[in-house]
Image (cartoon, rainbow, N blue to C red):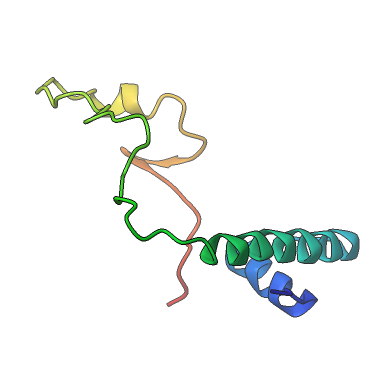
Length: 96
């Protein structure tokens, strides 16, 4: 399934990354190759194969939640690149 340059530019815009012309061409080829491999996988007969969430048979790799005291605001904000009072300050990501 070929991906063209316009689609790569659209994906880059959604991800908010800048790409050079050479990178756009390279990503178009690479993404097309990846999608071609998925088309090959879709041709496989998976009838009788049970769905699985994890191939290693692990039930869960998450720890149990245990209540603990929270960090105080000052300790939490020690390494914040920008802050406003007791809050993290971040760039706006949504236009109003």
